[in-house]
Length: 205
Image (cartoon, rainbow, N blue to C red; front, side, top):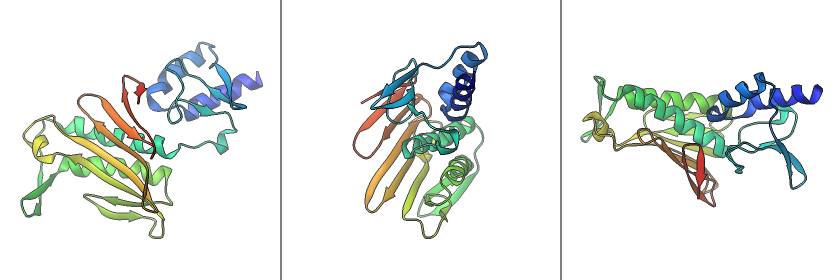
């Protein structure tokens, strides 16, 4: 019973949003997550397969578990994409930035949603947002770069050709990045060495 309780807490606390609801339903029904050993460590293995960033969860006390940088980048991009979808087709407020450039209230709100994720999960990192400028830790050696709505002009005229971008830089290197297509429900992410397309919950190199 103690092991089942630990697995329930682990699944509830650590699985990402696309998997969270399904696992809660399974746990309520008494179905235990499938555990396997990989390189001597125990992991939860979802039915969608194992990957090193989103769906493989290290078996460790919940206090030691946290989202890795790829998880964060994906969550940040998805948060911005959700706002962009919600505002699409509505009457937008146009905010002039000069030299023919402008933002909309959708840009601003999407960036606020992205910032909220980073401020909660990476409070020690610096952030550079296209709309809000610099924030976060001033002395942070790691910087998150946010573009909440790439293609504002397309978006303003109700064209669905836009993207939500986030990247993490440190020491001149890119450690993680994600680009979300809010309308095709596709997300491209990279861990600094390889890139993947996530669609329908599946990651494809």
